[in-house]
Image (cartoon, rainbow, N blue to C red):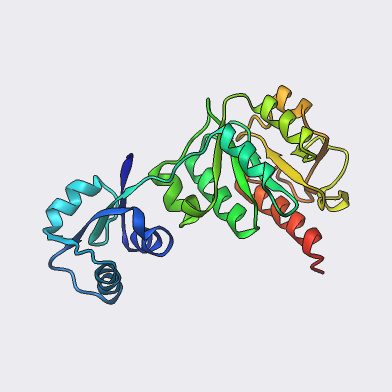
Length: 248
C-alpha cells in the first residue's frame, strides 16, 4: 500500500469526509486547542481512531515546510486505474459517456483542479497518459479536495490507441484547440463524449489531435490568447453538462 502525508485542517477534514477508510495515522499538536481541530479529533473518535498527540516540533519535521496547522495524517493514496479498467467501465456505462482526457498534463495543480471539476460536472472518469504526465500525488489530492478519491483516474500507455478504442464503442472524441473553426457554444456535446485537453503550453500532440472527431475552441474576446488549462476544462465540461440537462 502506497501512503503519503497530508497536512493542515482542510486537507485532513477532506480525507475524513471523502475517504475515512484510507486514513492510517494522525498526529495532532498536544498544545493546540481550537474548534476546527477539536471537530476532527471528535470525527476520528467516532471512527474508533485516536490521534497521536505530539509536540509542534515533531509536526514541523513531518511537514517539512508545509503549513500543518497543528495536524498531519498518513493516508493511503488513491488508486490509479489501468486501461483494462477503463474498458470495463465503458462497457457497463448506463448513461451517455462523459470522459475528460488530459494529454501529457504535468502540473499537479492543474490535474487536481481538473479532477475536482470533472467530479462536479458528473464525468465518468479522467484519462491521463502514463509517460510525461503527472499522476496522483499529495499535491494533486490537496487541490482536488476529495475528488481524487471519488473520480476514477485511468492511466493509459498509448493515448491514440485508447481514443481509437473509445470511438469504436460509439464515444465521440472532441479536442479543445485554439485553431478550431467552431466554438464550443455552437457544437453538439450531448452525444457520448470524451473531451481532450492538451498539455500546458504545448496543447494536444499531433497523434492525439488526429484521433479527434472534431475540434472546438473557446471564444477569446480580450487580449489574452488562451485560458489556463483547468479553467478551460471547467468551461467545456459545464457546457456539456448544460446541454445534457437543458439548463437555460
